[in-house]
Amino acid sequence: MTPGSKLTEARWTHVALPSCDLDRAIAFYTTMTPLVVVARHSDEHGRNAWLSNDGQAETPFVLVLVEFAEDRGKPQPQLGPFAHLGMEVPERADVDRTAAEARRTGCLHWAPMDLPEPVGYVCALKDPDGNVVEISHGQKVYEEVRALWGGR
Image 1 (cartoon, rainbow, N blue to C red):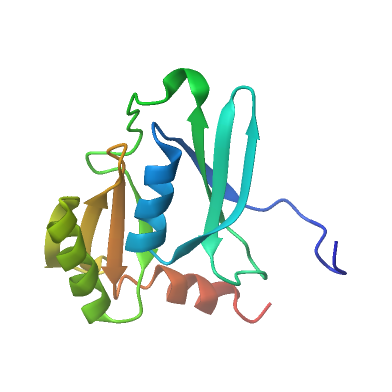
Image 2: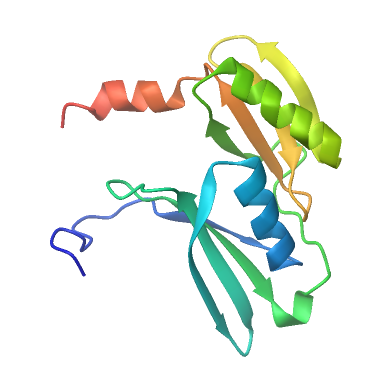
């Protein structure tokens, strides 16, 4: 463990979702979003993968995908029709590129659209289990939180 890597206060660290096919879910998230695999674990009950933004060391947040052996092959959507994981991208064109790829692969849930503040320009995808993943530009969740606490 590197110096300063031990948790010193309560922190929001992850969201866990069941997956009927872990390999397919990993392929979706590492292709359609900026997430990368940071760890994998398995035991007699199943296996999981932890995904996060590449190099996100200061404030790590992880998507934990869990494939339970008894549920393999049985989709278990948890997020939908509106509940979703939200990811912001730096450019409007990033939303369009992601939507085009999602349309091509058959996982586009909402076509790109401009919505009133504070939402911005968004599209949404469905992961292999049917969970909704929103891709947004101009939503400013990151900017507002950084403005509030960035000086700490």
